[in-house]
Image (cartoon, rainbow, N blue to C red; front, side):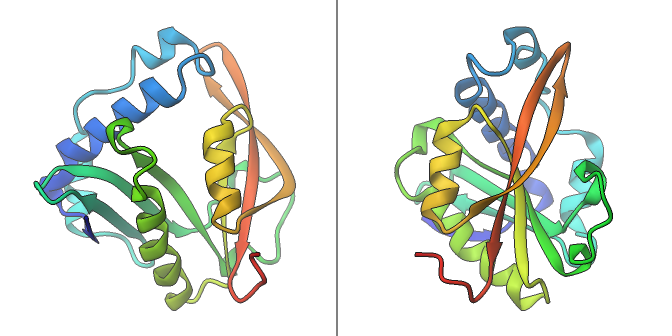
Length: 180
């Protein structure tokens, strides 16, 4: 497996990974009618975004030996839109916006390989910590982040998926901290 920067040519495969991961991983958590509406083709603007990422943004893919895109990770500066209060540390925080692995590759180290490439990149680009949001009712993802050294920090938010309101919890990873 190889982890490399995503290109605009990867947009269809990235979308396929997201769709498969959502429909399998969120089954029983996100309402079926919402999962059925997950867009199966890339948005047109995704091609331009991948061709020229904004400053301090990263987007990497995991590529299997046969060339199949098995997962992706997307991150950049922390987005404060889910926070209720002003956060003096927000400008030094990076965020993992999304990390998804095709269910076919679950348990094969793809997610860890993506994080192993993404976390150093975020640190090298000036971020002192990384945050991410995860569905509270997603134990598989929560175990993955905890094993990678992330810890919940007490912040919660709500993701509205159709008529459903799904609780999110925030995880934090501090560079240089004891992650044991």
